[in-house]
Image (tube, rainbow, N blue to C red; front, side, top):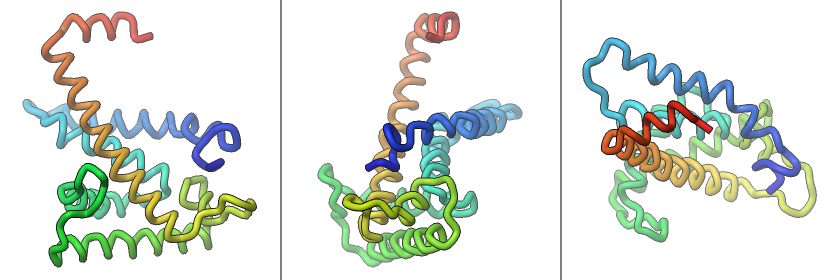
Length: 176
């Protein structure tokens, strides 16, 4: 899909750099007065959710809801990505998430921005235009898959640095 990046939208991710730096800086600055930090809950989880929400065009006030929905859904997925729990809570969570994404698609279709949902919802190109159902499922996939893998990557990377301080020193000395 052309909206995800090169060659049609080569700057989409690169344009996020200032915002990514702001998110990381804000999360780390919040550690200033603390003696303990849970790297998973206080950083590794919050960072990818914020980034994916920004990429999709989710307003800041929607991020906490995304976190709640994601927590419920991810805990109930099998390795193939199927929801394994048909409890009323799970069904309600999935329905709320889908309804929210549909409202977001409608909003971005009426008032497009420089985000992925706007690009997908207002696509006037022929051939590979996504339906609203496909935009919903793509958005859910990006949020859940992008969030889960990044949380684990950051957490395991930090654990590696704590276990092998020489690697951290090498990285800070020569970051490239």
